[in-house]
Image 1 (tube, one colour):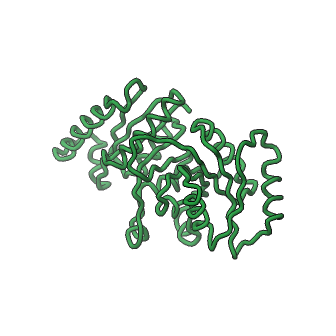
Image 2: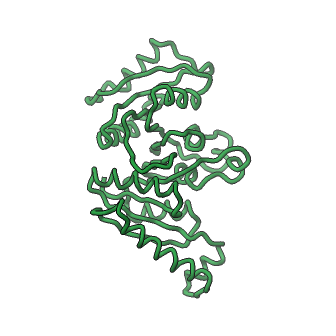
Image 3: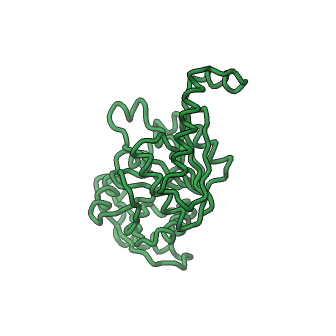
Length: 275
């Protein structure tokens, strides 16, 4: 891992993401890229792009540059290679663009989640990044000053398309130095006998040489509740999930377990895009 992108709005949740990024960066000797986005109406961003100086925008831009510089020199990032990016854009679009341009390996964001009408009609920028990002996204759900992962759950149906995300999860697990729990949730609508589930897991893992993990088949009313309940049962520090990145009407009709968990889980979540 060479580059970690940390979008920040300078909030407490963003600072928690920064603390996590610093710990991971030190383990991997990675660069930390701090990103702040000034979100403006499209007309304003167009005017800025052609060189017009809008006094109010320039005031916020200068203030943000100073705060980014101050953050880059904060004690939590001492000794790390840190760069800063300030962008005028829609928040989640800006995060995706900067990640692609800089070829980052991980995006780390803080989130307090959303629920009810806010979740349905507005959604969160973190959720949109999770849906759109081609690189893994680590969502820090609590206000922390230290980031330690002792128990890491990778939840999956362990179909063939999950192999690539699982291999990425293995690499992250080595960075964290945690105990890895492989979780398959059995539900009434998609029930497998214990024998069938174990056979599927064994087939999935047949060509995996690193098998230092615990396998669990957990029964619950639905997949999301099963993951949340198992995470609570073992007091997990991190949940790993894959996302198809559905958009538009397909996303509306199908929904996303990963995005729901990003909103509803009190445990931090690490997401991987299924290619």
